[in-house]
Figure 1 (tube, rainbow, N blue to C red):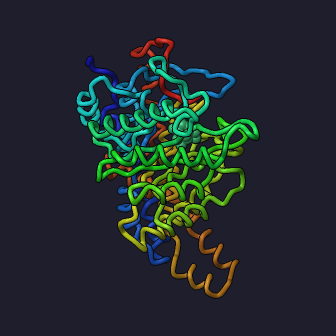
Figure 2 (tube, helix red, strand yellow):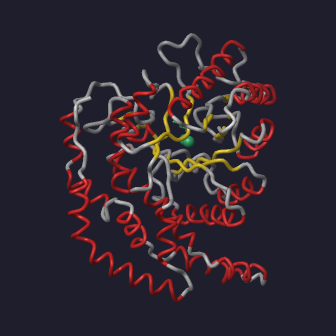
Figure 3 (tube, rainbow, N blue to C red):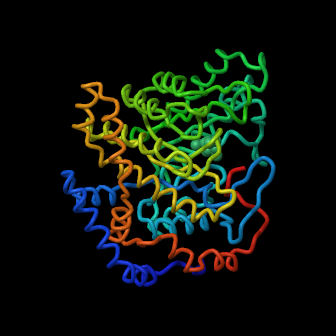
Length: 431
Ligand code: RM4
Ligand code: MN
Ligand code: MN
């Protein structure tokens, strides 16, 4: 493979050197403020450095809507170029060391070669996503009327096999999880036999689960609507929980923040799934209406903080609690790399803010039914500007103090525009 442009460590160091003194001032000042609250900024910074969220391979391309897609320049044309973009994100933000693949969009001809290339770029592989929501050119049977829940057993078998193949590919790459999201559902009352469809879904999942390696996890992702507009087979966290419980310990639920009706209390769903041992992972994004797939933290940052408040509480109760964190977004009007960098940093911000909650005080206020002080305790953490901690974590991990500024200054995108003339095909970006 010929050498392509990469941001150099010298560029990062030069920019950091120029910004370091002011960062140190801000960091020290925040450190004093936090010390007054009994919090060690050094400890929080170490925790921030340990935080990681996976990048979605499909997120490095420009997305679109069902009305259109407006491609940007220098979009990745294959999985190797997607890896390269993910590596650029990781190089600057240092909290995105893994990539989550979507098969067949990213099916490698030679998994060993892909794994080696990824290792060279400092990236490893997170959960593998199966795709039975589209028909592929080489595919024998159509998913038009469903996949795992189709009324025709031969279509169901094809979907089961595809998921099993995803596990095989994942094993060759070093993944240890499979995420199953199906688009199956109905557009009209009467179209689906609700109980029949759910029964077929569980049966299909069982066959996939039966070949799951012992060290793997299987995530069931629910979504309340779209592409089906009347009923969806795995439509909510309760259904997802019931199905995961049918399968066994290696199966759990994945919460995509965009897959809920507006105003649903997602942090409470998170707490419920934690309580019953079935919270497996997240797809982070943000939304105003439905599955908008907007950038994390752009619409409901307080909700994101509240979700992390639940997650950190669970981790304090049981140190082995470690759900998988992934971004799942569609970048329609921005440079995808910029959206992924800022989103990863916003998710990390919510995590760090939630670390600051005075849990002892909160429990006391809850015990005394003091709602104002309870909310105030959360606010004291949420309203703290932890930017210096995030920047210091990046600096100490070898990333950029000002990740976005450096990315823009590097001219990465226009250089990729020259290196990657458009071939008119893009398997990146969801439509
Ligand atoms: C779905 C869902 C899945 C993702 C696809 C591309 O809405 O969120 O996780 O794989 O989109
Ligand atoms: Mn998702
Ligand atoms: Mn989605």
